[in-house]
Image (tube, rainbow, N blue to C red; front, side):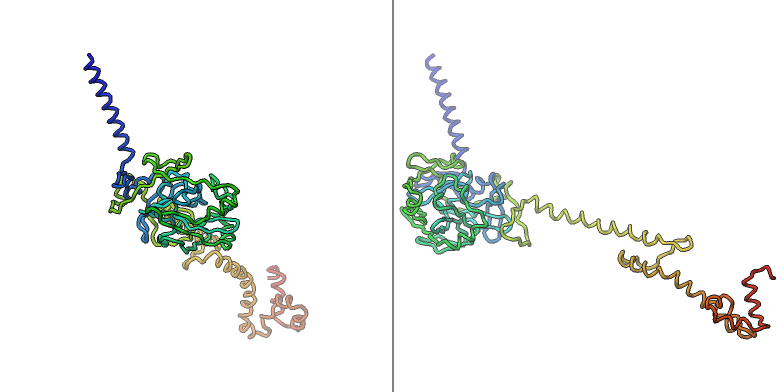
Length: 416
């Protein structure tokens, strides 16, 4: 009986241990322990781990880069979190689940098509930023790919809109985004600041100094806490860094330089891959475009094409609607534009007047024949009545047959 119980307990413990081992394996997929005892990953781990939070796109100059998904138009790197002073200098504590990678490895740059994009890197640092300060403000901007790392002060001045500026008194605020100045005021503050970027190597680790701790203490009126950086487990990397007593935990694995499959060839990252636009230049700071937006743009062109010819066939019947003597006047030439039709319509109105003016001319045509008689028939009574007294002297001479005929026409057919 005791042997049976022991066997059952052994099976139960082995099952529990196996389950724990499988859970640990699922959490740490892609994470290995290096010779130094620290966690080790490759660039492919970035591809898979950041896919749920953004998109991967291939750019001609930098290869595969990552851009965050579903962020506001005012979003900026190194803004959602706060600064702490550690034994590695100023360390950025991010509130975003992907901050363990994007704010301690690689570089950022503002892409004209997709906004801020992150380029994976292999070197860990408490933060990769450029520092600017004045008497009243402190600003920092993510280092672009063009700035390579070297020990000592870095003489780098980036564009004003790439910096985040806050009042010096609020530099240690736990939610520093609440005190970030709007973009419209960055130019005004930037021209009054000076570059204080400074990186050192201590015990084979990058130390981010830049802003003087003594100056911050004088401004805020209290001592700045100093923490020691400790390693965080891989299963907690998506959480915010924990600060307990004098320690702050971060996930900072070593990145090995090996060739890995690109995001389109990886099962976890394949769905986050988008196609970059080609042959189009857009202004900096433009809102991001998704793959769906890129596909909708060419579909809008064939919808507008049938609209232009659909209106033109309706106009010709209106121009052919004019009739003469109850019959439709055929139009053999091309129908002119509406503006030209209206102009020609105004020119056609005087046509009846031209016909009335032509009647006297038609009556004057038979005058040469009537001149063979003793008196010209062209000087009829109708013309005399129109001309007034000038026709009377010609009608008085006796024996004038033309005058009698004119009188008969005036009296009518009753004299016949």
